[in-house]
Amino acid sequence: MLDAFQKLCSALPEPTFLVTAQGEIAAANAAAGELVGSSVAALAGRTLSEFLLDPPEKIREFVRLAERTREFIPGAAVVRAGDGAGAECRLLGGFAGATEAGVGLIFLRITPRAESARQFRALNERIERLNAEIAERRRIEAQLHAHKEWLRTTLSSIGDGVLVTDLERRVTFMNPVAETLTGWTWDEAAGLPVETVFQVVEERSRGAIENPVHRALSQGMAATLPNHAILISRSGVERPIDDSASPIRDERGELIGAVLIFRDMTKWRRHERTLQLSHRHLQQVNDSLKQFAYAAAHDLKEPLRGVSIYSELLGRRYGGRLDEKANEFLAFIKGGARRMQALVDDLYRFTQAADTLNLPLETVDCNKVAKQALDNLTGLIGQSQAIITVDPLPAVSAHEMPLLQVFQNLIANAIQYRRRSQQPKVRISAERASSYWRFAVRDNGIGIPEDYHRVIFGVFKRLHPRAAGSGIGLAICERVVERYGGRVWVDSRVGSGSTFYFTLPETSGAEAVDAAAQS
Image (cartoon, rainbow, N blue to C red):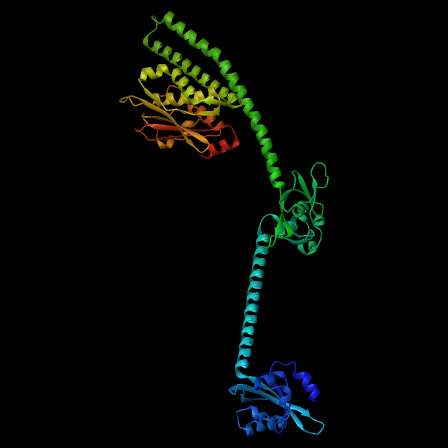
């Protein structure tokens, strides 16, 4: 019995005694000797009351109670430590058995209260930490679950097909659109190789196309299908698609899978074919209209020239014999012929401008173009005594002749629609804005009502009886400027003059054209 006790209590950290019912110490462990300041061997045969400050009867009663109940019971005692001071301790005693001589032994553990409290607090702190860790883990799990559900809902609600794979290229998720396009449900496709679910071939050759998921996983970067890819569904339905695959990485940047996003391009292809047919038809119509305009301009010149010539001859030969009414009618014929001739000439210039615009772009010095326009308008400028100011102008990518038409038409309009009581003043300027130039032709004329700011750019639009032209000049300006990727507009109020603006790209290229078109 004693040997078994020694083996048992030697491993215990708490001071532990084995005592008889009379309170004599039968055995003790090293912690017990350290508590009372004695060696283990010197404790044998001594009474426990020698080391306690409590009355001996209290200890004996505790031991007898433990022997009688044969249950572990708690208690308290004040132990005389090795330095003579008292240390309040907790007791835990219980019947341990009997020796061969029939003497009952009591197993008694004595733990200093301070140590017990420390252990209790440490245990409570550990329990609190565990509870906090459990609560935090549950919170994180709840967040992950909520995020997972949100992500699943989001992917399920978008209009493109979404298919997710792991590193082995096995399907782990499909949204409803992907199910519809592939013909596989998520439950059926889960765990299958992506090649089985997502089968693509080249539209013309019908050859197999490498799945973009392969490249996304092997190269660790986004990959797309080539043009004209066809997705073959489980039931054999073929659809043209557009797609892209991207790698999926965890918070450490480690590759964990890939996501494939694809869409049905059937409607887009149908619209593309319709647009191509419409464009082809529009091109044919434009060519026909161009041929008609050329023919009309050419074929009308001869009869108009004949009307003009014979009306002049008629006036010269019979002018003195005609009465006032006849002379008035003859003047109407001459004026109508001149206006018709001007209209034919403008129509010819309008179609000619379109041909010039199809030529390769060249660098045009706008200072030179503006000077040429002023030279062409010398008669009008001198007659009206107009003051023309030209600021330094830039060079742009365009064609000289169409650009000359723009400047000449805008300057001529600025002079023509002047106020009778004021000397006409026209200023031509340009300012840089991003990758394009914004030109301005400003005058002090009669102005234009706001309701007509867009109407005036239509073909054959004349808004004032003073207008001598055919109403095609601003239409030519708009056609030329828009061909170069710019736009033209007017800022004007009646009685306060007008400013015509137009933009031209600084360089020839898609970026400059786009920037000018967005101005």
